[in-house]
Image 1 (cartoon, one colour):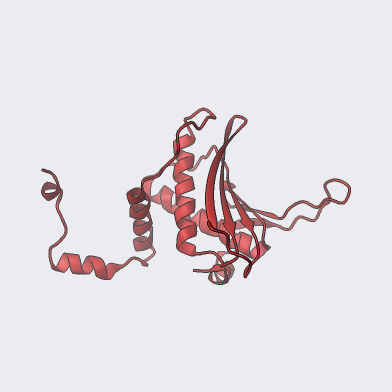
Image 2 (cartoon, one colour):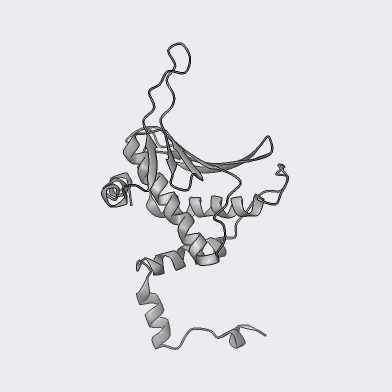
Length: 194
């Protein structure tokens, strides 16, 4: 789903984010950067226009809630997740239009997703990256502010959770599973174990 499709969701999602168009001067002639904070205040989205920021913040919040519904807990967070929207639709596409980063800041971590808007925003890719950052955030809660190891979420975990989310939204590929059920091709735990 591209930006246009995300923006079309906005009327049904009213009240789910705290959008702010900031115009108050900071210092002589400076203007605050536009930002939107999600309902839980775990996500802060910078850049682009209010509608795009609200759509991204809403999608992030929906992914957060789906994760909480699936594995429980997690209502309290310790690290903000920042989403930085860069570039303009139709602009030059960078090699990696969505990039994750985790940095140490005094006493905590800064988790960030940079999104370039040249080709719009792919809904599935956005959901995958947000989920990955949410899992990082949970794993970093008990750590001191020092990331020595490379953080990695296994693909099987991400794909499994995303597929579960799609099922609950009735978006999953039910044809694939129906064919497996018909042929009795699903494996039992006993069959998987040696």
